[in-house]
Length: 233
Image (cartoon, rainbow, N blue to C red; front, side, top):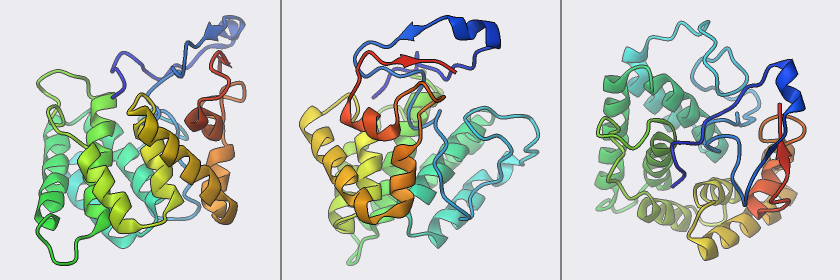
């Protein structure tokens, strides 16, 4: 939903003097990728960096990406853990297109098998939808992106419906729908903000800044506040 032209920016100290005025709700990079989510002490894929950038110190074998990711997802009922794990998986996937395809195929197959299940798993739909959008934001629109042509919104709606009142999942939906559909985005953002009052982990995430102290907080972003806010790091 968000053009792959947007990429995460890291600036040297002299570049801090340059101000980048953001038009509308455009941000300094894909929101599903460039912002690390706070998951406390929960388990996720191994990571050295604190943001979007692979430091080179991870030494992670991407041949295990699909199996490792699915194992972590199956053990957690916390949407933010799924969001951060799929964010890391997407970053690793860019360096290994075969691993990228394998992971997406397995999540899509799981979602489709749940469509006829007597007791469908909300996370099966959520994970397929989230990874699809993460891939679209980070792997580009070329034919090599296995997510091209997939419609994530139907899966996302099923996940939220099955999950019931889950403000963390609404937060994910608000990020995915930043550029529309507008009516659904507003509902998701409102539900996430309201739910954060009784969800400490979500509240911490909403209070964090997207990239750098001068950028929008995540709460401001999903509420589309301060549309001309300057982003710098």
